[in-house]
Amino acid sequence: MSDFILEHHPEDILLNGVPVANIEHADDILTASSSPPGFQVHLNESQSWANDNGCETSIPKCLCQIFGPRQKSYPSFHLGGKVIEHVQKACYLGLWFETGTSNIWREQYKVKAKKATTAANVLLGLDRFVGALPAWDMRTLYMARVDPYLIAGCEVCLDVNAKSLKLLEKVQCKFIRRMLGVGSRSMKAVLFSETGIWPIKYRRVYLALKNLCHLIELKDAERPAWNALQESLALAREKKMSWVNDLCIVLRRLDPPVSLEIISDWKVEAVQSTMKDVKKSMEAWIDTQIETSSRTKDLLAGRLEMDSESGKLIKKTLDFRHYLRVKSADHRRALTRMIVSSHSLAVERRRWTERGRTVVPRELRICRFCQESVEDPPHAMFMCDHPELMQLREVFLSKLYAEVPEIKGQFSNPVAFFAGVLHRREITPVLAKLAFDVLKVYDATPMWLADVYATN
Ligand SMILES: [Zn+2]
Image (cartoon, rainbow, N blue to C red; front, side, top):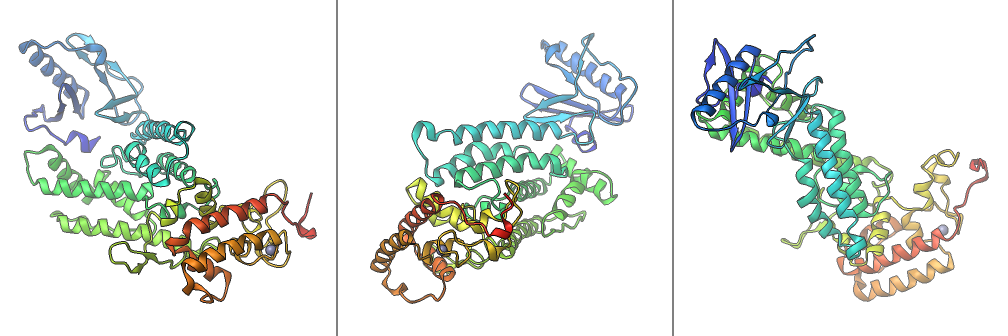
């Protein structure tokens, strides 16, 4: 609470050397003090002011909290001769404070995660009333209705507590997975690389830094927030608990870490540079995940996207990918599953330990039809000689070559061919239909199990 106490109202007074602070928002007043007597004196002052100005204080609405080490007994506080209720959790201007725990923001994360979950569930249930919504519309609704809860208070409560942050991450990942139609075991990085949505931990600290720029620009000793920042900086320089110190911890924990130099005369440009570093860190994390995972490195690593402004192929680590605009929800989901490796083909399913089966080495996740190659999306869509699949492929190729004749003979292997046709936007709906039809054929036949690995 030290940061908070130091956030003086300009007209605050020192009572017997004890700092007190009033923060007012309309008729909501928050009073803080570092000592029980100081707090009581401040309450008396407030009551006197209310009496002099003909105001009535609603005692049931007045709450008090005591922070710090646990005590055997706690003092009572009075307002107008009546005892104020002592509570463990209280909300002021949408921010929840909790006492009796080392993490005073624990309730804040819990409440916001719960509200975000409710909003997310409403959006995910919309299809029952209006049919399947386009992915872009779902993304827009997510940013309007779910994201505000996930970023609520991020300028104040920094994500130093991993358990609390996980509550928010869980809501975000679940929503994006449902939006894309991929399974709960799908990679996390692709949820962001394919939708352009920022992972919540990077987004929250980025916004906190943005707010820091605003605070620095205040440069006004009359402003409580600017004073609070100066005090927080002073505490951080002495390596004491403070908001600034927490900010440095959160930045250091990013993958890869970001550093922030604590200097007395902070410049907006320096913080803006750190914001760029946070963005780079996020992109580096996503790139590394995609480049090192056997599920995505062949198809997605180094992928180029057509830039609508310049008309050139460029690398975009995060973007709302064009294939998510395919109108048929079933086809779109099938193609998405093929791309992000969240499908029902053996190369993915055999990596799981389910129904008593052990994980099968990749080279033994063999195609259930030809039993010659690994059963992965490029093989299933463009190589397998199963008659039904060949028929589907023939239809696809005739449309592809009619639309993009120059692609014929350009690629030497099915992975390169898949990557090649993927960025041709004119053929994406047909490619998505192929993915849907192919998965349907595979799902109708049980997977092939090498005898040595069949434990059932
Ligand atoms: Zn095959």
